[in-house]
Structure formats: structure tokens, C-alpha cells
Amino acid sequence: MNILNIIDKKRLNKHLEYEELDYAFNGYLNKNIPDYQMSALLMAICINKIDDKEILDLTDIFIKSGQVLDVSAINGPLVDKHSTGGVGDKTTMIIGPIIAACGLKMAKMSGRGLGLTGGTIDKLESIPGFNVNLSIEDFLHQVDNIGFATIAQNENLVPMDKKVYALRDATATCESLGLIAVSIMSKKIASGSKNILIDVKYGKGALIKSKDDAYLFSQIAEKIGQKYNCKVKCIIDNMDMPLGDNIGNSLEVLEAIDILNGKNNYLKDLCLKLAATLISMGKDINYDEAYKLAQEAIDNKKAYEKFQEFVKAQGGDITKIRVSPYKVMVKSLKNGQIVNIDAHKIAQLARAIGCFRETKEDKIDYSLGIVLNKRLNDKVKKDDILCELYVKENYNKNIYDQAINCFEIKED
Image (cartoon, rainbow, N blue to C red; front, side, top):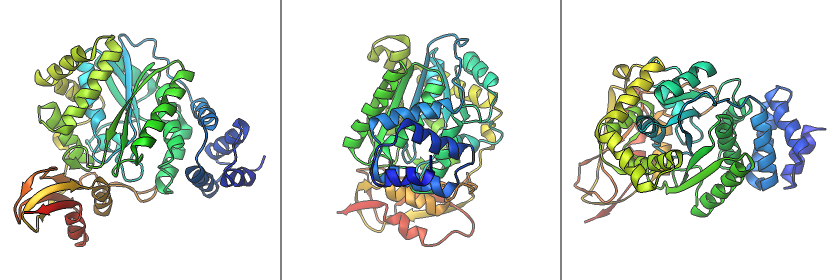
């Protein structure tokens, strides 16, 4: 078998057999196939797509690249969730503690940033001391004891996805529905839960751009779940605007803390909806009853207490979270009403500031980011602060104009 023939076959939009996918992807994992050839194959897949059989085969290959967790020792209902990615999405840090406060368990394996979307692991690592590389034994013990733990992909759990994920991030091959489904579902199945919720984001600030593609992705995820005897539910959510007010790693952790302490915005509403769905699945109760439990967990601060317990157990110290001392206040140029805050432009701005990786090897400055001071439909006056940019000391002054262009204001 020859990797050049496999690349060329997919370039010509032909079906790849299990053995061909196995040869290519395990060859890359085992360092027999270099980055540039795997990049070419990923690009061909991204352009020409992969069919359902290829998706199921590749998911199986990914899962078999590592171990599947034995979660039989965890007491209580086990649930899992994943988001397909969006600008400002910090839902895991909010939902996990709510779930734990309601008596369920979540063993969450998360990823780093992908393309123009942030990653949960990068956000958690912005908490000084936070360890995302727990041993499997410690990970499962924490889930059973506290109710929630989050780790990065390690050498044992779907190592193939960890390696391919990083390459996709650096080669503009993030937006393939098939590759997104393989990546997410292989990790979910390897994590052991039979109750899986996928928060499917679509729009300008998401990897999935259209509602039709979001529905298609949902169908793919459910098919994979059926093969592995998993109950999979998908909630489809628009991501034309950023999710929440903060974008950037440390800033997003701080907003998650604010939500758990009662801050009200669309992000909180979505997290309650997602948490209620998981509670309903795990406890086998109706949605309204589950929603009430989720709301109570925030109101009585038990969810925030679980967050503190979770962070402490993994070595983090939220009192030491740092944001950049260098701020740029972006002001409105006119009176009017905000009719759009473009999530894709916000993501590009965040990348220009330095929030995301440009290459696999890049280090992230966790202290950088954006805080939105105004929301959709807000009335603004000239010189009102639209957003605050947390920047490096020697930041590029052009980002001011870039920030202004993220806001569409209908003049009075």
C-alpha cells in the first residue's frame, strides 16, 4: 500500500477502504508518514468530504489507537457532553459543576483550541497550577469522588486524534464535518459514557457554518452512537455572535466563575438548557424537573462550590488567574443601536491579539483577550465603550480599527 496512491484517490473524490484509512492514519501516528503527506490527505478529505462508511471506519480506527476507559467503578449516572466549537464557548466549565452538584458524574476529555475557536484545555491551563494530565486512575477517582474531572488527551486515550487534531489546527483543515464527527465521537466513546450530549454550534463563529450542516453533523454523530450502543442527543445552537461576554483563556474562566455566581446572560441560559438535558438523560426524569435542579444548583451556590472543589483537586488556584495589565478601550464612533456583533470577526481579532495558535508549536499568552461591554440590540452613544482589549505591551495598533469593524451599529 502506498500513501501517495491513497492521497491521490481521495483527491479524485473516491471512497477509501478501511485498510487504506488504517494504513494512512496509523502510519502517521507511528511516524512512518510525515506531516506534509498527512496534511495533503486531510486537505483532500476537507475538500471532497468522506462518506458515512469512511466516517464509521475512521472512528473505529481512532478508538482502537488507544484504550477505552473502564468506568464500571464509578458510582452513579455517568454523562458526557461536547461542543463542536465556537467563539467564547466555555460551557464545559459551567455545566460540569452543575452536573456534579446534581449528583451526576462527568468524565470529560477535552481538546485544545482548533482554528479560530478556543479549547477547554487551554482555558483550564490558564488557571495557575491546573493539571490537565492526570493519570487515568486519578481521573476516574476524581470523577467518582467529586463528580467531575477534565483531562487532555493523553498517550492512552485516542492518541491518534490528539496528533491529527494538532495538525488540522495548523493546516486549515478544521471544517470537515466528517473529521469533526470522528474527532468528537472517538473521544466520547473512549471516555466510557453511554449518555452523550453534543452541543452543535453553527454560524460565523463556529467550525460548522450552516444550519443544514449542523443537522447533517447531528445525524452523523447519532449514527456513530448507534454503532457503539450510546444514547446521543444533539442540541443545535446558532453561533453568529460570540457566546458570552469574554473571549480569551483567562477571561473565559473568569466569566464561567461569574455565571456560577449568578451572572445572567445568554451563556447562562444555554448552560442551564444543556445541563438540564444531561440531568434528564442521566436521572431519567422530565426536562422541566431537570431544569429546576440545574437552576437550584446555581442559586444555592453548590455548583460554584463544585467548581472550586474541581479546580483545587486538579492543582489549580483561581486566585492567581492573571489578565494582561495593558488594555485598549474601543469606543463607538456614533450614536445608534448594535444590530450585529460578528463572531468570526471577533475570532479574527482574538487571533490578531494573540489568543490562538498559528502553528502547532505556538505558546499561548493566556492573559490576552476581549471583553464585550455591549450586546446585541443595545443602544450606544458616541464614545461609549464597545469592548476592552487585553493586549501585549507592544501590541499592533491596527487592531483598534479591526475591533471597531466587529460591531455593526445602525445610526440613529
